[in-house]
Image (cartoon, rainbow, N blue to C red):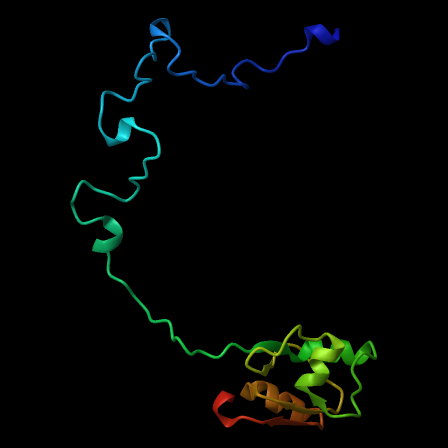
Length: 157
């Protein structure tokens, strides 16, 4: 076998149909677009338009509600906190606040506050002060001998 004998599998590379290149091609003159009208011209976007009939996306019922002033919390799981304490990045003896979590890189930014969730195990005795926490997280921290204080009452579950 030589380089000039190499070829792709038959039907693997399909050549593009060149429209508007003369009558012999079968797609000459109007290039298969018919005559006149909006769709025969360039720059047409009629997606979702159904000829004046109510479009499908408007006929279907809308569900749900997006609260405009919803608070977005930075979420931290207990397992992640324990991992950072084990790696000596977080000091378990000092109080862990939201600012400390941002400085150490546990969370990137506070957003509307930091919320602690109960996924994972925590064994260190820690004092945590955050905007929000789940009931399971509070129980797990207290079971480990620490304390979890929620600074804003509205954010707690």
